Length: 199
Image 1 (tube, rainbow, N blue to C red):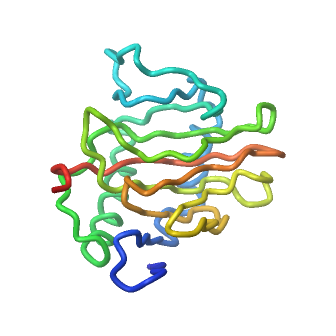
Image 2: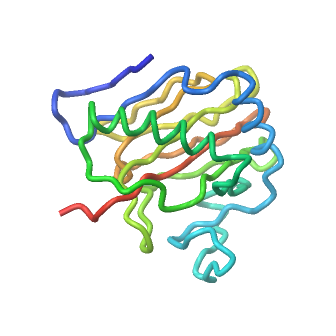
């Protein structure tokens, strides 16, 4: 089921969401991987590869979470294929961006209450690839955590509905944040679709 939020018709800040892209069993598989994330998240603009540059920095004032990277393998190819199908449909219907596909691995993120996991206001800019669409899927059910609200700024600050499996798609230049988790843990999937630089 497709949903679209448009504060004003034809605004470039529009974002869309898709409900039901993954089954509960598939969400369980992804959430379990995110729960086991052990890499301290950094802020910076480098790709998650074995040759990751040292310009990525841990900054607990800006971001407190743990990540794991899901590359495209025989085991995970279905995740990429499903996301590609959903996002390409959303792009055709609502964004009409010139896209090339996945420029990076998928990020699985774990926010915990022990450190008030959060990610302050930011844009998904990356100096190495041209991110054009950001995609976030909530893997945790709302009763599993408190706080941890995904917010997108478009004139005003908008809280994104807490719903397990909800896929939210928005232009990567839009400011967004995850508020601190005060109880429980929140897992999410984040990925970016790249393309030629905006002109």
